[in-house]
Image (cartoon, rainbow over all chains, first blue to last red; front, side, top):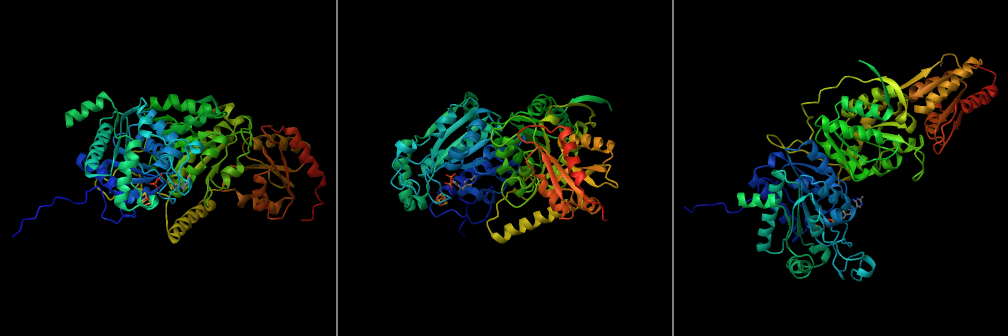
Length: 258
Length: 356
Ligand SMILES: Cc1ncc(C[n+]2csc(CCOP(=O)(O)OP(=O)(O)O)c2C)c(N)n1
Ligand code: SF4
């Protein structure tokens, strides 16, 4: 008889339901990483997720835990309201770049400034996915979108915004990192960053955010492998990966817990 | 219980605290700022949540978040800030969580001024943001009534899982009057069966206003409309003075209702058969009682501190049975009893010889 050993399965924190994400979209990878971390920390039963308006609008259907759906850009405000009355719970937001870096930039900056003890997972795919591929604040110079049809003209629209660097400058931020989802190696790093962010929250150290460079093959009009290559070759140079803010307390935490 | 001299805004804040509000989120704006300031001091003292938000947009979405966990929560603002909250209010109503909003109205449009006004009647009664619904709207006319209605606002919000406004103008917000506060209610220990409290030991819960399929969203709307019909049936509130055997009824709410009361009393002294009807709920509008009065009198006169907004509701209640006139001031100008008296007299002398 052949002995069976489970080496890969759905995390408990993900529901057994089909998602609506396009083939090759890395939103699904990001969901899985968050779910694995929540399982590993054993906090699913006391976690509340706040979904954005954007392609991840149904994230609450995919995570097997309590969840709420915020207005476009307001997830950090909503998460603040939840966390302030449920300080022992784990509260996180999951937001796209239009949601977080355009319409909701005030809410995310102020959540970071207040040192709001929440975790934000920020999906930077350099485009508005849900509404069909318009220019985002993170769209790269020259990148064609439906609202920058001849390529993003920085003379007219300015330069893409680097949120990790910006939020790292907020004193209330305990942990801020940017990682990418374009390869297995990067995905593993992304998971470690997500774990650190949640651990920082559990230790009550303040605001934590992990920016994830993510693919949108559909609106970039690329195949899934081409899209991953585009993340690596075009996005990573403009959005350098790494940890931008690690307070001493967070560093002590990761050393202690490994 | 003791009677104290209390400022309207402070009384509203303390009444909310005694009603068990566990989280307050707000942004400074005159003429409601004392409410926020009282919360800033008292809420941390009591171990409850207070956040000065970065904007009214953020404040209402913080309220939305706290409301999802089943605690009593509120914000307060004044007209321009209420304009900014519309989207969040619509989400709150769409996902049926309870929330209380105080609007100390000021003169508009635009930045307008900080003087007392009732310019938000349309904004608060017609809807709160996009979508197809009315919030519940309570309009006190004195500091004591503000305290009583603040307490009731939380009960109504919980009962119907709906948006409840308490609206007043800067005059009531800033005015000091003797009033009595209720005792401190204990905070609730149990959370409602729909609240987000973490899924430990139970199925997960979701709070959302999103329904992608039209029939599903229509079902949500039908439920909402059913609830609003119930509210309309059960919660119409008003008060009246000297409305027996009168020919003219003056209709005014809040501060305008109080000023009208003075004018009505003088008109009575001068032998005119005039009474006062003061709506306490602006939505549901107390149409049943006002329609009944329309059967008994010859005319209505509406008094407002705006261009005539409640006027529409009075006309609907009058149903064409009696003529409806209007007197009002705008832009933060508070009408004096004399000008209301003059209007009463002008209408009164022209009333037709009674044929009823
Ligand atoms: C107030 C408001 N404005 C605009 C929209 C329309 N809208 C929905 S999703 C979206 C953009 C989402 O893009 P992003 O945050 O980058 O997330 P993605 O879809 O790429 O994951 C917009 C503009 C809305 N729902 N609400
Ligand atoms: S549109 Fe883009 S971001 Fe949205 S699900 Fe499809 S690939 Fe992903």
